[in-house]
Length: 93
Image (cartoon, rainbow, N blue to C red; front, side, top):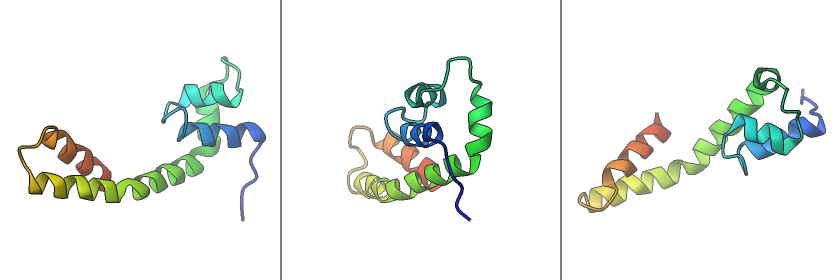
C-alpha cells in the first residue's frame, strides 16, 4: 500500500536530497515548515521514505565510487587519491 504525503512532506523529501543536500532543517524551511516545528516530528513520520531515498542515492552513486577506486588503482599518486578511496569506502559500506 502506498503512503499518501501532504504537499509539505513531499516538498521536504524532494528538498532533503536536492537543494538542502541532506540538511533536515534546511529541507524543512524550503518545504514551508515553521521554524518552531521540531525536526523529530517530521523525520519520525517520514523515516522509511528518507532511508529509502538515501539508499537509492547511494546506489545511484555507487558506479562513481567504483570508478574513483579504479582511477586510484591506475594512478595511486594522483591528487586526492586518499579522499577518493575514503569516499568510495563509505558508499560501499
